[in-house]
Image 1 (cartoon, rainbow, N blue to C red):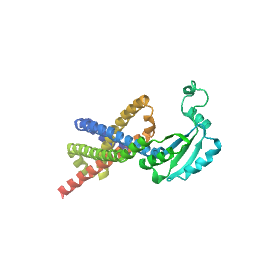
Image 2 (image 1 turned 180 degrees about the horizontal axis):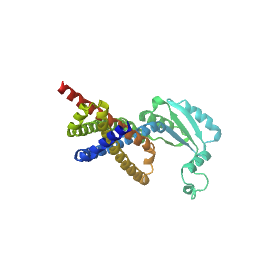
Image 3 (image 1 turned 90 degrees about the vertical axis):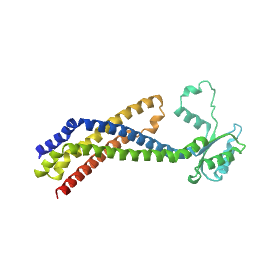
Image 4 (image 1 turned 45 degrees about the horizontal axis):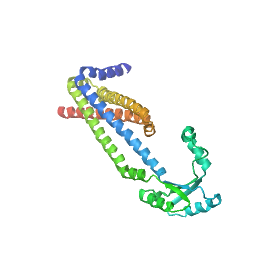
Length: 295
């Protein structure tokens, strides 16, 4: 049994050497398609993270004037809670704002300022049905009319951009991924088909010798799966190096590609499985064609 397995494995890789003029262009094409496919998956993953973070943008921050007394804060909070589409209102004191600032930024930024320059503010969150740029802008303007607030901020421009790009950020990477998967399948099928035609005599002799379909198909399936694995491995390694270099220059990019190793594993498994499956289908179709010709 192990002798047969060793023969089948050696036969599958012997085809790489004998048919390198077919295998090498196929491997290069698989590498390029895999590089684009992995990049498309990476963009798609970053898009989903950005869309999931969109909910945190529908928050309004209303900064209080310095002369607002502390005993009026509960009344202001109650008034804000009765606004249309408001889900929750939380008060952040000046001391809490300063502590939060120091947790996220360097304290050296405050060395030239005496005391606490940060004002107290209210953080207003919107309900799910109101999480759109129009309602965000409307409620922000309503809150800004309150005389107790010095400044009212809301990321309306960013919310508008993400809302308008949301469909495109998901639709185009999915379309490109599907087209690349179809291209990869055709490339692998063509490569295995050419390998089959060049070893036509060997396949027929194995059939006449009583070899089973599994015995005949195994070398070709392993050959196709190996092409998918090596091509996709080189692609994800190169893409990983590029992303690592870009992330060093722009650290914010690392947040969007934090799940890159999951994408690597998924790409390797997907392309190896697809390569093996379509190699199997190609060989099985070829064997059935020969069986029909003989009958």
